[in-house]
Length: 476
Ligand code: ATP
Ligand code: UDP
Ligand code: MG
Image (cartoon, rainbow, N blue to C red; front, side):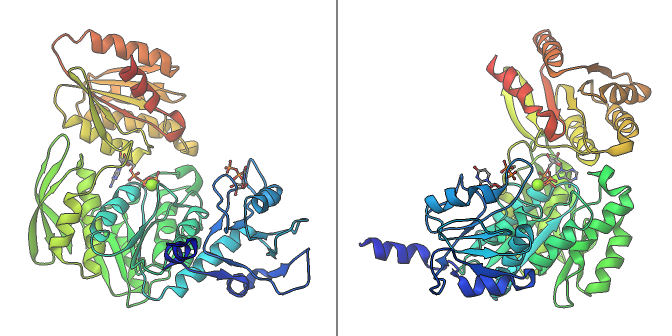
């Protein structure tokens, strides 16, 4: 086979960016082409738009973003040297490759992604937001839809105003479904990404207290998440949680846009005969009037809720319940979300990926259902703004009330969580200034257990990197 043939095969199904469609997609940003070297027509052909010279491939178009650490405009000649065929810039520099000049490159990324999505007539898009469980639910949907047809699924956690467009730019013509996670760190972010994504099915998992500092109140969080429903038309679907403090508000907002509102938890899609085991759950899945047994290989009742949300999204698109069941039974937890391993006779549960008050409560419930002495190792929860002290106290009370045996906290707010826990139970709760002293205490504690196995669950905000404690225990 010749190299030419090979290239043809590789580019099959890939969208082709050229001078004219790049210009059309970014028209609203006063875009124009600039070429230093000659006056001839701009001849750009590429399948991929990339923002990083550390991962660029020959033939890509380089889009220069400016971030906290670097300005992509400083890397245009690096990109050219690595084979980039053009650059998208907000100010032209002196370089050998053609430059598409736009008023704002971050917005250009969004416009290009929106254009690409609009060109893909056969694509059905599911978008998911919520305070907790987005990645998990997205993986469950990936497991359902990936078996049925080519499906683009958000990689990792690319869920913000840059990540969502980057994911959409990975669409190729053969994709039939896209499952996209939309996150919100600030007001208006979901409105921005939703407008680009234009979901056929828009799902809100729950309204918690993540980023409470930014949004001011849970009411603010509810309004922000509900932006995911804003582009829906009556031919499209809103998926709403039935058992959330904000169920009624969410339903009201969704009904302004579509009459196809599907509830999960209690109404259209629900679970009965729930049996939550330490590492999995069994239940009967009710979808409309159909009932199927499910063996979900993920720990925690909150994951049953995520599974119901995924089932509701699939049901909206007329997917057979038997395919939903197979997909859910083959779903796997992503790293740092309640993965468990043995350390001698003790079990360590890694839930360190991230934490907000909502997910800490869910994790405490999971721990309380485990065997042996139950130990929670908790790092600070970040981004709570003025509510930090009261939220940590309140979390401590909730954790204490679950009846777990030991709570070890580290961070600026550790003492508040411990005080909360002590208010409501006889739990053995301790605050530590740093992870090293917590580790020493925990090691001694585990060694002293003789024949009494413990289950230790680790959790905390991403910034606390609580997984280093698990690594230290396992490596020892
Ligand atoms: P992020 O906002 O960081 O992208 P996410 O919404 O994608 O988070 P996941 O990564 O799926 O959420 O899960 C993160 C943690 O949240 C899990 O480890 C678990 O502890 C908790 N969690 C997941 N689903 C739920 C839920 N439905 N209710 C409460 N807590 C949950
Ligand atoms: N960038 C690049 N090459 C480098 C360093 C940075 O192309 O060697 C790009 C990066 O991908 C991003 C932009 O420069 O699009 C701004 O970088 P940022 O400050 O966001 O840095 P990062 O978070 O990637 O370290
Ligand atoms: Mg996520």
